[in-house]
Image (cartoon, rainbow, N blue to C red; front, side):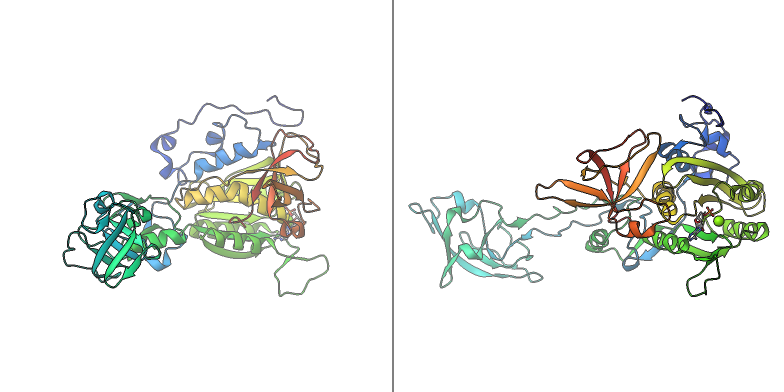
Length: 470
Ligand code: AMP
Ligand code: MG
C-alpha cells in the first residue's frame, strides 16, 4: 500500500517486543503497552482506511480473557462460559440398555442352527420369556440359556443378553416369543455403557458457551454446580445534545436515542453484565466524568456518537487526555468512524483502572454493524468464549448491487433458499446508515468483500445470517 495525498502514510512497525507483550496477554489491558505498539504489528495499518480484518486483529490483541471465575447452579449456567474442562466422572449411559421396546436375548442364538428353540428350516427363533425389565427396574436373575426377557427402552440389558428384537417383529405364543432370525442382528437395539460419554473422558472444554444441550449433558453427568467465567462488565452510553429517551417529549430538533437500546439488546444476547449509563450531553466535563466512572466499574466501555468528523475534535481531546485512544476510519460501510483504545479511571493513562473503549459511530445501523464486526468478537474473547467466526454462506444475488472496491460493505439483505436449495438474496432497500427499518426487514448481511466491485444480478455473494446474531 502506498501513502495517498492527504492521508497518513502506512505505518509499518516491527512486531511488539515490549515486556508486557512478552509476559502474555493476561496483563495487556492494564499494561502500558500503547495502541501504537500493537497497531504496528498489523501489515495494512492505514488508520484512515483500515481494513475490517486489520481492525479486528488489533482489537483482539487487547481482548484478554477474564481470569476470574465463579460457581453457579447448573440451572443458571445457560450461555455462561465454561471456566475449566469438564471430565466425565461416570459412564453415560451407566449400563448397557435397550434402545427399543422388545425382547432381549443372547445374540449368539441368531447364528445357532443347533439351538433347541431355533428351527433350521425357516430360521425362526422361539424363545421362552423368563421375565421383564423396565427402565429403573432391571431384571436381576439369570437368563436361562435359550430364553429371552421382555424389555422396555432404557432398561438395563440382563446379564448374558446383548441383542433386542423390536416387539413389532415378535409374535407371542403364550410365554414364548417367536421371530425370524433376520429380525435383528447381534448387538442390535442395544446402547452400550459409556457410548455417549466414557468416565474419564473430557465432556466439555473450557471456553464452551453453554447451550441448552450442554446444560442437559452436564445434568446427565450428575453435575449440580459448574465453574464459569465471571460475566464481562460492559458499560455503555449514548452521546449527543439532540438525544431524548423514549418516554420524554421530543423538543424541536431532538430525536429519540435508539442506539442505547440496540446496544443493550445486543449485549443481553451475549450474556454480558450490561451497565446502561444513559445519555451524556456534548459537554467535556460530563463526558469525562462518565468515562472515568465507566473505567472504574466496567471491563469495556461502549459509546455511540461523537466520533464522526466535526464532532471528533472535542471527543478526541477528551479521550486522548484520559487514555490511549486512536480515531480510525474503517474501510467499511456502514460504520466508518471508530474510536478504539483504553481509558483509565484516574483521569490519565496509567492512573487507576483501565477499560477497553469502543467509540462507535452515531448512525444507528453503523452502530450495529460496527458492534457485530469489531466489538462482538472482542467481547466474546474477553468473556473467555471459544467462539467460532460467524459462518458466511454462499448465495446468488437477485439484483444488481453497486460496490466500490477498497472497503467491506455489509448490506442489509433478505435471503431464502429456492426450490433447488440455492440461497438467494436481495437488498432490503435503503442502505442509509441511519435506516433501521431496512435492518429490521433484513434477515442477513450481504457481505461484499474489501476488493469486490459492482455485482450483477445472478452473481455470487456471501451472506451472514442474523439468526443467532441479532
Ligand atoms: P454523531 O456521530 O454524533 O455525529 O452522530 C451521527 C448521527 O447519528 C447523527 O444524525 C446523530 O443524531 C445520530 N445519532 C447519534 N447517536 C444516536 C443515538 N443514540 N440514537 C439515534 N441516533 C443517534
Ligand atoms: Mg453527536
